[in-house]
Structure formats: C-alpha cells, structure tokens
Image (cartoon, rainbow, N blue to C red; front, side, top):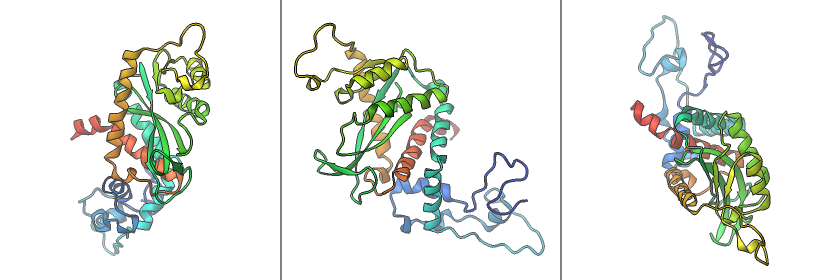
Length: 289
C-alpha cells in the first residue's frame, strides 16, 4: 500500500486518495445545514483509525502485529482547505459536468432556459455590488436549464449592480461551447429568456449555435417601434420558462446558498456546482436507495 495522500498502486491513474477522510461529507453537510466552518460537527465525520491506516471500508477490521494506529484528525480548516482546493482546480465543476453525462438520456434539449437569481452578500467579496431592488449588495448567477429543470450550463457570476445582459455574449459563447464539449446536441432547440436578455448580440450567438431565440422584445431598447417583420416569439413555449423558478427553489434548499458568505468567486461558484450536481442526480440517487 502507498503512503497516505498518495496514489493507489492498483490503479494510480484513476484513484486519488483524500488524506483527510470525511471531507466530502463535511462539505456537503456545510451546504445543507449552514454551519460556520469553525462550528463544523467534526465528530460526526471522524472515521475509524483502521480506515485511515489501511484504507478499508467503513466498519472493516484489520490486525497486523506491531502496527500503531494513528487516528487522522479532521479539523474545520482541513474541510475548508479541500473545499477551496476543489473549487479552484475545477474538480467540483468536473463532478457537475459528469452528473450531466449521467442523466444525458433524461435531458430535454429541445428547450433551454436562461434565468438569473440574486444572492445577498452581506460580507462583500468578489463580484459584489449594491442592487437597488434587493436593498443590499448582491451577486447574480445565471444558470441554463433544460426542459426538465436540470442545470446543464452556467454563465458565471456577475455583480449585482449590472443588468442581466452584462457581458452576455461572452458568457453564452462559453456556455454553449461547454455543452458541445460534453457531446450535447442543442441545435434546433428553443432558447427561452426574459426581456432583460433581449440584445442583438445574444440573438446572434443563439443563431450561430443553431438555437432559436425565444425572447420577448424589450420595447425599452429602442425609442421607436421596429419597422418590418417582427422577431419570432412563441408564447406557449415561453410559458415553460417558469420551470426555472422550480429549479431555483431546489437550489434554495441548500441553506448556505441563500446568503453569500464566500468572498471568493471560485468558492461561491463551487458551492453552486455541488447544488447543481445534487439536483441533476436527485432521481438517480432515489433509485439507488
């Protein structure tokens, strides 16, 4: 057996040992229960010292003469260390993308929905600014959902003082490229969004990627009515956009995401990746249980 924190000799390319067992459970519990990092229930995540010494399943036993079992301590700083590490190196994003591939057959890519949600950030941080409607400093995150409410893409985080269409062209291009990189076919689908996303650049990006923009025209974008043929808009398909509110309600179940305490954008977005993963795999987990 290799050293703690090293790579398993049986499959060194695929198995990466976690030097602190239980960190995964602690990070997930942090999002659900909303405890502070320093108040983490460490005892509930401590594992048997045999597991640390020999990497056996929980409840397994081993006896080797002369071996001194040293219990691996799990502190709140270690939990946050790995959460921050996985957020910055893209591990949590890869887990979320893998969840999309797991439910690929259940996706409804004929309709994509873009919507934003503001989160109060009382302690400030990156991409945080005052939002007059919320009467406080907020951050805005813009996920893209399929027709069934699964989160399949995300445009990142923007400050609360910007409108939803801020840098929308670059964000949509990145999101659509990520979807195609996963092997998802989005050509021919409808792209639902509200009036706040009605920009010429956003419509052009949709056309370039084979999507049909189903966005109501924002009359405030022009001083005079548009002459000629009206832009295409299907009101019946647009009504399906409100399914995004159900997805946001699922996200709000993770109490740690109701108010932003993470000052770093990568950590705040990494926490959402965990929530998106659990939402995508909710039916898969129920079937296994």
